[in-house]
Image 1 (cartoon, helix red, strand yellow):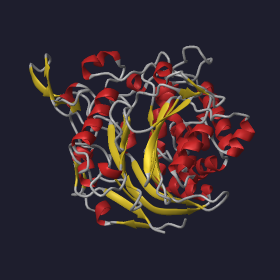
Image 2 (cartoon, rainbow, N blue to C red):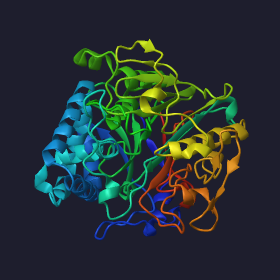
Image 3 (cartoon, rainbow, N blue to C red):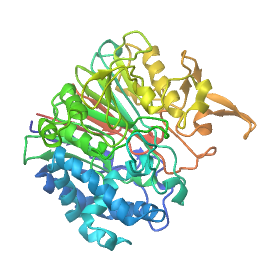
Amino acid sequence: MESRCIWLREIIVDDSIGCSVAEKIQVPDGFPKCRHHSTWLGELKGSWYDIGREYGKASALYARCVFDYWWESAILSGKRNDILNYLHKLEDHVMLLNPKLLDMIRGEAEGASVELDKCEHARECTNYEKLLFIENAMCYFIHGMPGARGARVSKAYGTMSELSAIPVEATDCTEFAIWGDATADGELIVSYTQQFGWWISNYRFSFIATPTDGERANSFLCCTSAGMITGGLFSCNSAGVGVGSTAGGEDPAVDELDWGIPASFLRLQAVAYSNSKEQASEIITKGTESYRRRSGRKVLLEDAPYNWLVADEDGAFVIERTAHRYAIRHPPPIVRKRNFVIATNHQFCERSYDENDVESDTPMYKITGDTDSDVAELGKFPSPGTVTRYHAIRWACEYNYGRIDERMVQGHEFTAGHHWYSRDGKKIEHLWSDLYKNWMPVHYLYPHSTVCGHSGGYPEKYHNELPSVIMFKPSELKAQWTVYKPCFWVGPWENSRFEA
């Protein structure tokens, strides 16, 4: 489908509108300050390589900074050859899915070459490898490298929180979709809160990509971090399909990893080539027909556990995945049938499909070490916010059922929320703090435990965490988003619209 983009120019030129604290966000000495807005590139149309090249030219300076920071953090505690081997093993699996996706990275490397050649570690790897590393760095630092199947996985050589001068917080994302009698107009709204724990994710770029070579593709939105293609972790297309993924599997002792397709490339394939949520689900769970033929697999091999949300104007559902298994989750299993679905970072499904696509009674939460719990049991979770954020959205949907619209989703009951709900629907905004000797807002006491996540305690530290939000309404083919926390955003959200 042909597309063009309508863009409200005043949103990106007026710094009185946008992120109101951009100048306060901490960055290392010598690095560019964060901007009030994403850098809008318009529609990039051409071959996958051409699109990557134009994006690379525009984001080159910031991509260089991102690479220097992440690469320095990786090699300080690891081995260069092991990291490159990790990247090329993942690359081999992407080739099985769609080689064109890697053309975009190669084009990006050419476009950014002048700046990438200036990297402090420019000779450590090729420019293409630099960007392949940025594209996969999130999974590397969160999950590490896979070990032998069935064994405890080998974690990354170091973590960003151990190595960075600016503190790094949890990576906890929240996605949900609401439709039918749950919304004020009956139309579906899907929202994704991206909660990266890294300041460099605030170097934001946005554009519409329209690939013209190879298999016919949809135009799709990239609202991303410099050096990454779909670093916003959610994308949507001109067919009205939205695709997002959160990290799934909360227990690091039982994370199921393998050398498989990275989520960033799987998301790119799904949003480019899906005309419905069912087609997106087919790609995420089983890959393409050519992938199954080349790999000999019946179920797509992913690199790590993720919770995927796929949506179109008719509804939405969640796909819970590990490297080898998947399960499909429709509206919440813990309440009566309602037209909303939510995914944070734990898994629910009681049954799953194995690598041979055979259904079994193996529950996903047993594989990933997850369970749903009340806020009183937060100590059981390495990242307790997965529970508090899930129930915050669940009860916001219940209490506002039938009245939910875009403005409400943008507000303090949903994406700008600083509260919890207990499992039975009690709102929790403050807890007693022995440290502060006072009742304190929960978003200051527990990092990233609210949908609009904060960290660093009180007063606000303006650390590196990035809870930016993207919202998509398929019936209008309209996307809206923020840079940095929605509670700090002033004025209308940045937005674009596909038109046939």
